[in-house]
Amino acid sequence: MIGVHCSGFGNGRDTKEVELWKQVFWQLVMFDTVSSMSLGRPRSSNTNDLDLKLPAMCDDEYWETPDPADAFWQPESIPLKLTFLVHHIKLMEIVGFIQCSLYSARCLDPWGPTTLSSTEWNQKAITELDSALNKWIDALPDLLKYNPHQKDTVFAHQSMMLYAEFYWARIQVHKHLLTRLGQKCTLAFHSLAVCANAACSCVHLLDDHHQ
Figure 1 (cartoon, rainbow, N blue to C red):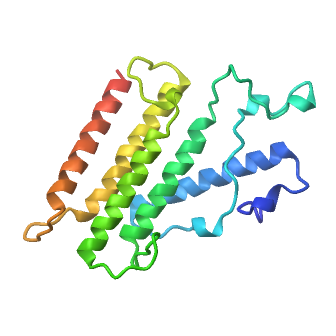
Figure 2: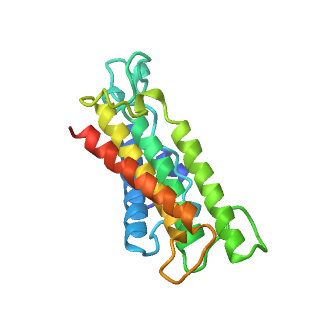
Figure 3: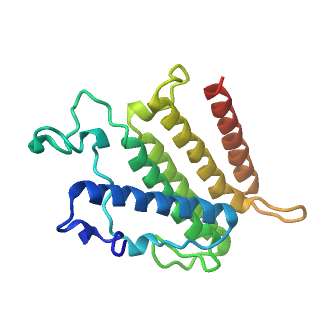
């Protein structure tokens, strides 16, 4: 569908159709982000070309109601399952910044022009990206905070997926500085420790969740 990436796509269209297209499009953007990062290839999508709004904060079972005035209204007593998708999209946006600022052939500076050396640039970029990841996980609502004692709920599975991808994203930030034998980097030991800790945390998370 042409124009799905634009905020004006929904003008004159059925609200349910628009929301379905938005969810499909964001899923494609996230798949593109993860697959390109994993394969070391450029992304097909570019967030600078998108002004599509995030999905509506309402689960699809409340899109249609007997009273049209109540459509797209989530009862306050019902936890919102779609919260997962919104926070997943935000995490993938950070992963996109990781890719363009650390792994692109011509690294872009999301924070403006710089005259920093390569080492200073790496340190600045990693600090900013680490901060963005920390803010993201701190902003997760309580229902998506991982709780090892809740394993059989939808939110427990969603939380596990978000935390696993958070650890993966943390590794993507710091593996950039891991060195080969004979190479030296003052930040390598710290980044190695961060990667090892994130990997161990992810393994423990998955093992605990599936027991």
